[in-house]
Length: 350
Image 1 (cartoon, rainbow, N blue to C red):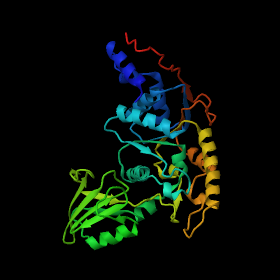
Image 2: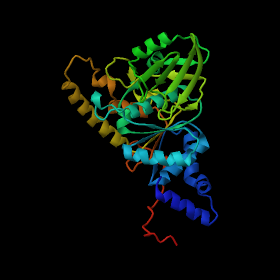
Image 3: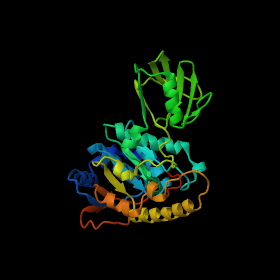
Image 4: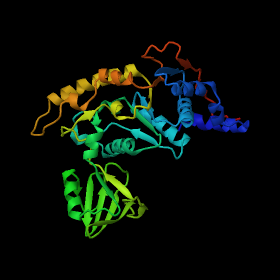
């Protein structure tokens, strides 16, 4: 969270003015909400800098309660505003959607934490009934995702009272390419001790402990890896494998095709998204050409999006461009604000 936000919040409190209420009543918030409610499919919001953008988005979201997808140019900017939004909207669903690989086809450079975050977002989209905000960036949505039907086909659903045997779950986990270990420490692992199975699914940030009574699920708990203490008692869970595995030939789709059609799209710079997508596709084509070995990799067109595909999908969605470079000819359908950076005060708070 930027220091600017805290400074402004403290200054407003000194003059008995609520910062959030001031934003809520501002003309720019009202215009943005009105634009979205009228489903004006293409508009812009220019001139915002720093945490002003986070405050604006949070107040618009609170007023509308509809899904938001925010695409920033790079990971650093996305992480900055994600941290802001987590503070501004405590208790709300703020999800971060990162890239899964450091470079295309570098299978040995997969980041399990990122795969976990991506899987969690897809799982929430499938099951979430309440509105939420997804924060992402160009490189992350460059990768296609499994279609909803493929994810459903590769998901094991378990709930208390189900009739399942330990052997059946064991076979399914091997089919999902989970590794059997003594103690689970990361996603994609499981262990069996008598009638207890510990499973670290890619759809949750903590592992599950499933206890059997014969061939019936008696209890389900989440637990802490370090202390082994229970942290929750869900009634039902979903076991999802590594859905970012690039060796399979399942049907994959553009992430913009995966989200709910009612989602409000915010894009920082569409031209930047197009340029980075073209560059990443060039790198993917070179990496694919240089691959060797017995593994059957999918081709770049099956795994990654093209800039033309992005533009086609963006045209179908309600969009607010908030960068300095406007891609669509929005005419007067938008607004420009004049936000200045906090000048240096050299610790002279008075």
